[in-house]
Image (cartoon, rainbow, N blue to C red; front, side, top):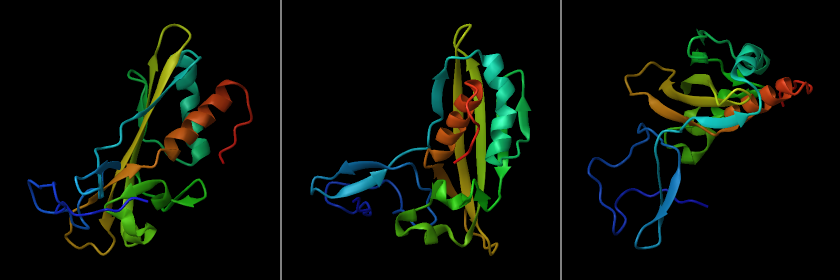
Length: 185
């Protein structure tokens, strides 16, 4: 179990103000201080990348169907760069679960209730890159932000992916490429 502590632990110093509930929450990385306490730090979530044993044109052709099966309406469609997805996913649910279950926003150590009064907007973008004649790389990045529903003037809180959307997108792509049954769990 990870204990989140302020940067006042022995051996830690901070160059700025201590984190607040409105501070962005990076993807977690755990480290120990000199006193043995654990702290959570991190950076933005990187794109998830998978090499597929299929040409990039074939993978690209299936991408709209994969997004549709997942219930994600895409408004980004760039065939020249093979980039597809959305920068405006604001629905409350995705694949039978609340959107807040797919990401971690702010200092969500208190659980899902930490984002219950917030509106989440996700960016879900996938790029298909050729890796030779018969292989391709599928890269998906999920980022977002949560803003208060009340419209107060607090700054948006950064959200990072749990990695589950990216995994399901890749799994759905593999099922379609191999002729398997296309089912989103």
